Length: 319
Image (cartoon, rainbow, N blue to C red; front, side):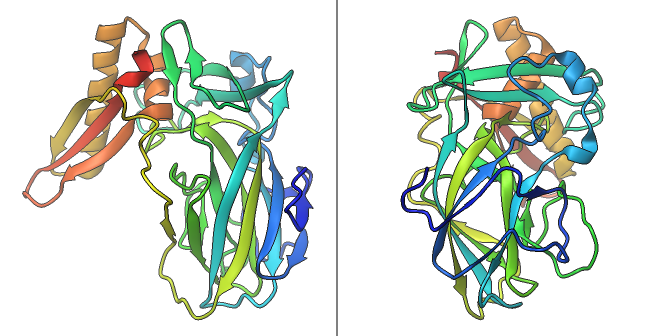
């Protein structure tokens, strides 16, 4: 229960895909603080007792539910919706936070290299958010955030929630954590804001296609900035964004070539090779670990004809 919240959006008040004709779950005044009960990105199809068969049987028509939409009074096209991210509370299962990471065939940066399904189930302390144990030797630092957060687009009809858009959506920006402020372009009256796809941890790039997918309650304050005329979302953070990963430094691999996507693939593939050689883990486990805590970075994009992409893996995971 959020004592400072003006409203609560319950888990049943969700939708799949963006559609500006959906009736709002709530009409709220600017400045309202709202608690959202967000489902995980599988809409509950995967749980603490799920098996590999659960990944195989996933209904992709029920992927990435978002809670809402919220009609914010006074928001009009050309304005921005100011979203102040107040906090995240993991949903508890037998007193523990729950999450999952999967390799889903046909999805992810290296989908052609990893054609078979894989699944990791996570359990973590929802109060301390201490690093989550993976196997016997790895611990993943946690940093909750909402992977999907955005407004309805102006274009009529139902649109997939999977690709991000200029009005937000499936941004998967792990720095949209508690304390950050996000500004979203408004294309329709009332903005019709929704949020979901909560994560306990993710690396920049989410390279296998999933993070530590974890159902959570999210508290946000929504306000309107008149006449902002944003072209795309922008955000501010309250301080350092990688402190939870920096303590022991990083292992880094690179990809170099004339095409950024190919270089990104090479950088991740090279890190998977390094982790399997150093740690004796399977390639698919290394791939999923890279997705939940490793960061893709463009290191150089001016020395034509070749660009450099680096992949950073935090050494603290194995320390």
